[in-house]
Image (cartoon, rainbow, N blue to C red; front, top):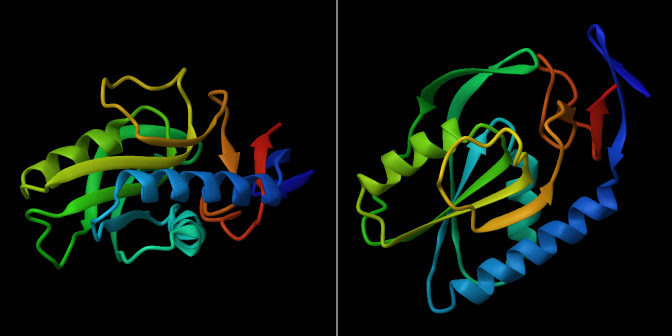
Length: 175
């Protein structure tokens, strides 16, 4: 068990399982994107570790970029999405894969989909390491899902609780 601020977390998903799932997801994307040079877009801050390990398993040419969005305060979603840092390159006619650490309500994905479709991308795919189907309120299909997990708060592997826990190599669940 670990403590971050005032909360206690217990081990949930080991690092080796995360790596194996990311290898599978990268292979699926590679198979789907043959002949393309996709732009992988990581959603910061949480997806920095997911993006890093995902592209290590992706063996074909690709480009990498990041956007920063915010919708969390403490352990719950605020429901409001704020784009904090945008893209500096044109995505028109490109194949884009959004790389997320976690999809719960789907609010961030919905906003990102609007942004990228307005840039006339060739195709838009969505990859997420963690998916909470119980919390998902959108009808946007997710192309690559690592783990379906219960609607409980998790930290580690890029995910934080008020700034702490992003550096943990495995996932912990709120006790």
